[in-house]
Length: 174
Image (cartoon, rainbow, N blue to C red; front, side, top):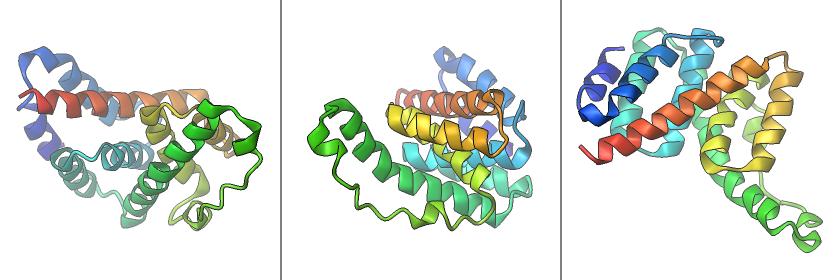
């Protein structure tokens, strides 16, 4: 975790909790290494903080995380960039006029995963939480559970994403 640790060392003292929290969650809790790094990368890509993404990507690759996990993290972040806006709109409007219309949004990447459907769905949870998209959160939670993952796994994915968002904010106040 050399590159991420370097980046975290730039955080102000006021963000000490974030340094500690990120080291803890990237060390793995209920998620295996691939799930942890894929979740972190999907969140970082979604957050769009280049130096944070670059540090996490370098450390994920150094940890032996496969190109397929990285591809699924990129795919999840990209698709969620679209879906969180559209489905949050539908939820917030809560109007039959919009909810009855087909989305007509291509989402084949969600079916053509590089690793597993469970991984892709898990990697989608963080961006859904970051966007505050209730419909996305519920849909991905159901899919993750259907694929055998637990509430602990979902909880840890959201914690990783929340901490990374805090780190991105703290990097702006350096």
